[in-house]
Length: 239
Image (cartoon, rainbow, N blue to C red; front, side, top):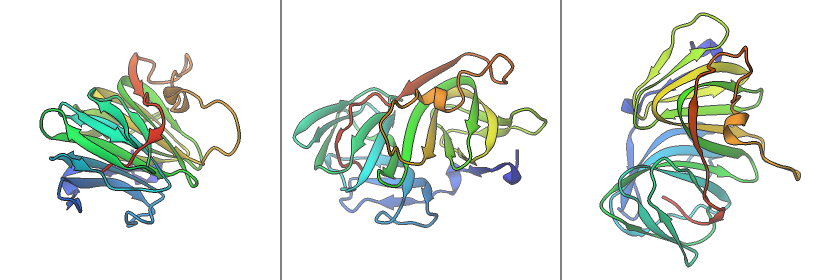
């Protein structure tokens, strides 16, 4: 694959750390739209957050969140006065960014994979997968693939092309229309960004929206394992 195929590789080594205002951790931004946007004017933003101490999380009004514990024992959150235990790695948890949230670390620092998006401008859906699966990116959509605890590789579907290898915390940003096959030796996050939901109706399952399961003639027909967002949508302020 190359830049002409709508794929951009974002290496972990090139990221800088920004210290939180409360001093309780640091954030390393993976991708943001619009490019160069800050915390007050992004449409969506994906980052890795190192949480080193107990304390409140920052507020993001109008923003929905998906948090995935990537490293560490977890956190005991109090979200709008309601306890929310986050103690299982690679299980996406959905939140809203409109109420006060306090964090108590269960046993030392953690690393969180964070997806933030303005609910009136975009919809984001996160799954954590392992194995081999086909990914389809439709026109107007963006897909972000982030290797978490092991290597992964992306290769173009239906034609020759060198695979792009991803080391832990490397990312690939795909814009539609595009098709590829993901081979994930470890847990890998797949985040799909698209237009916000404007009417009633069911939301398709996370992997099905990524082009999984493939048809009998599609590439990437091997087994895959998936963890989708399982947390009930509650009020929270994270990061």
